[in-house]
Amino acid sequence: TGEMETLIDGDPLIHPLDIAIDTSGALIVTTTSSTFGDGEGRILRVDPETGTATTLLQDPSIPFPSGAAVDSSGAIFIANMFKFDFQAGDFEFGKLIRLDPATGETTTIVEADPDSPNDFIFLGDLAIDGNGDIIALDPGSAPFFPPKILRIDPRTRKVTTLLSGPPLRTPMSLAVEADGSILIADANADPEKLGITTGAIFRLDPESGSLTTLATGAGVGSPFGLALDQEGELIWTNV
Image (cartoon, rainbow, N blue to C red; front, top):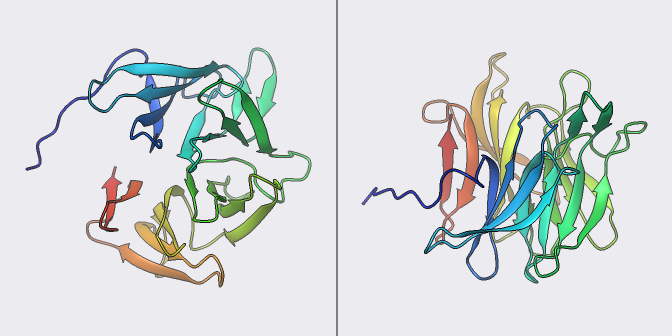
């Protein structure tokens, strides 16, 4: 019908960054008190029927929780883009943590090494594939660090780069199809190598590294959010 309903607004939903669905159907929402990387991150569980929000984690060590995904056991994986506290002189690059929603215990899976940023430098959106591996994006920092699509094994902590650099420019979000293919929304890609930027939706084969452009041009302004519906149809938002 196109009908829209407000489920939750206001505190504690300050600056929502990402959303996932847990094994019970509840929404897992990441928020921050500051979009500059110097605030306090919160992980919320929101009841989709009542809009009631429960705080699972409130932690200044993850001030920019830019990505969330839930595995089949109910464990929540959170990507923190970076931490930047100018007054304290505290700066950290991206990291991936696991949150136990029952106990609130967190475990760092991987974190960027600023002295050797070969694997990644920042971490953004997350998805989980059929093997339980984390698919993550590193938006990079042009022209110094290229954007990347990564596979992270949460058991061995091994990081594998699946795709790096052009035509990716500003990857914003991910989704994983039933066959394991990775869908990528890029707000400023140049898929046709025209020398101009335009939004694009890509499909990446994680085994071969083959990249296919699914959509670009009209109707694909600056794709930001990306999801698959129950029929496997692709839905995205433009900004």
